[in-house]
Image (cartoon, rainbow over all chains, first blue to last red; front, side, top):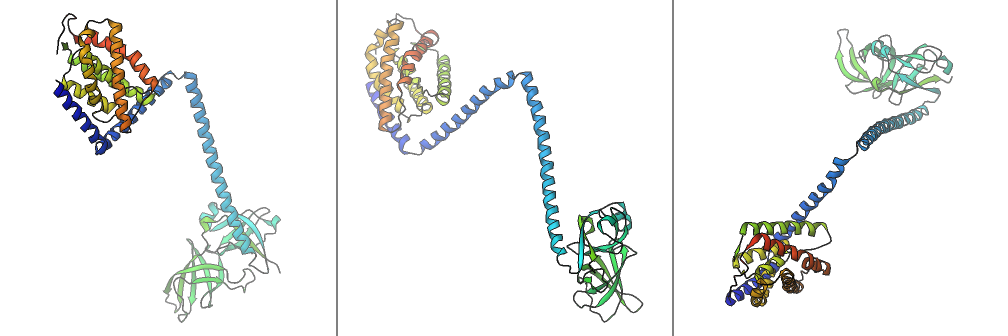
Length: 262
Length: 157
């Protein structure tokens, strides 16, 4: 028995050194960590379960009410945040318009809000919230930072109707921003303009921007109006060009009504 | 000497579970298997395989280096050899005291090994609770449910 015990002592010392100076301790540490995690989780569950089970009905109700209130509050804050970002967008647009206003020498500008309504969708006309009381008059041009929108058609006391450049009753005298050749554009509805009777020798290409001439005292010069999207030959010996407005009428919010200072 | 191995395994399992929970959730740090090992040594049981396995389990669950408990129990067994017969005829209180003393010696050896190998986990409070409170409980369970031996049989090694 004594011999066996001596062997056991030797084996135990060998095991101690093997454990200390070999890779075995890594596995032991891993096992110890995972056991500790499981026990901690178990302990958490044990301690929190009675709280859930024994939670008073009134406390639950109170929590439900509080939850609903917080959700409502969250919705309100989201709306307020959205409004704030919209306001920031409006301010940015107004700043741009302010910059545009300063470019038009000889013209006074009246800032107005655009109202997209059925009339716009059907008749290519835009309602604005400034009218006779605000010195808006028939025939005044309406622009924004991107370009020409149209011309004031009907004026009421507090609002006015703007005929868009794509309206079939609308015509405007334009020039090619590149070649400076003059041409007459007419609205044809469907968000398009048509320029007819272009001399065949004129260098007109797709992508050319047509701008105002400034010769009519209605529009300041060199304001973008439309962009050519198609050039085609008509049997009358002239070319024609199909154009789209540079202004996106669907995104109008604020516009400038230009009043000739003279 | 007979022990119910099934119940003995259950007891070891129970001790390990309780020990793991206490060690990982409280500030206490128990190592209760040496109490059990010393108790079976004093009962005269020295089954090598049984002791080897319990020592390995004690090392693993107690975060000691493998072989630490085996070394301490083997060394203590040299001391307990001469007290086996007296232990068997002792009353409960004497058994508790004997077990406590030899367990303390086992703990000291384990701590010394831990100090040498820089893996020590010693606390006076832990030691006091183990020897004074846990020790009688383990002895009671051993004698009541696990060890099946008539008290008048005395065996000499």
